[in-house]
Length: 100
Image (tube, rainbow, N blue to C red; front, top):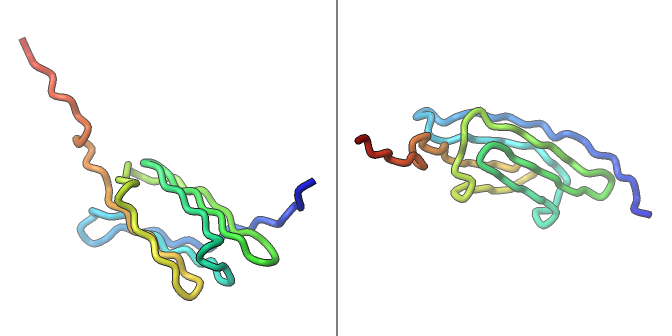
């Protein structure tokens, strides 16, 4: 049977850039090795799990507006995970409908 590990929510700060073009996150996960971070981003949400020796950080966040998940960038340094992802243009996938 798998060991039951304690899960703890990390401190998260989210904000947009000055142009409101990108969504930014600063997530505090001290004591975690970079290789132990599992970060997944969808168009509308983020899922993070990060293992430490004694417990796991875990969180799932929903976004206010769709983002371009494929263009997300993340950097981990000194216990702080910084994520930057551009917002999706809401008309990006629009289909032009001919009018008769």
